[in-house]
Length: 184
Image (cartoon, rainbow, N blue to C red):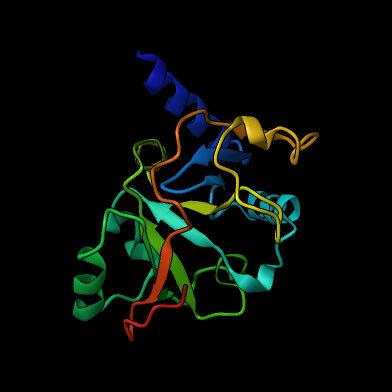
């Protein structure tokens, strides 16, 4: 087993144990966890000081991994497929079963099929999407290296997946998949 595949296997073990991990994405380090593990999501929100009402982004390695969570029309599939895999997040109507700890005060879910090799490999080996929110406390600058995670999250139990962030200089653009309108 190569060092890279061991790193992913070890990270997935932490995810399945209900832990929060920090991992590189297209633009910044992200905090992630199993989206269906309520305790893990609550822990992530607590670490980040993020209100549950805002909702969270899920990343995946394929649109198929996101299907169970979303209400998809042919128009939405065509729209999102034109930008994925890649650094574009889409807000798509959520299935009624999707927990409020993911959607917040919305009836939709923000999702992205990532092009970052480490983030995509995590989703692939986890066999599903992951929560992905920038690894910084709310209102603090985003973090772009594993080393810079140590000080703000000292004392937090976060497993760090080392790797380079992608070349994107700012967080991913967010679009409404129903209207096509840019939200961020």
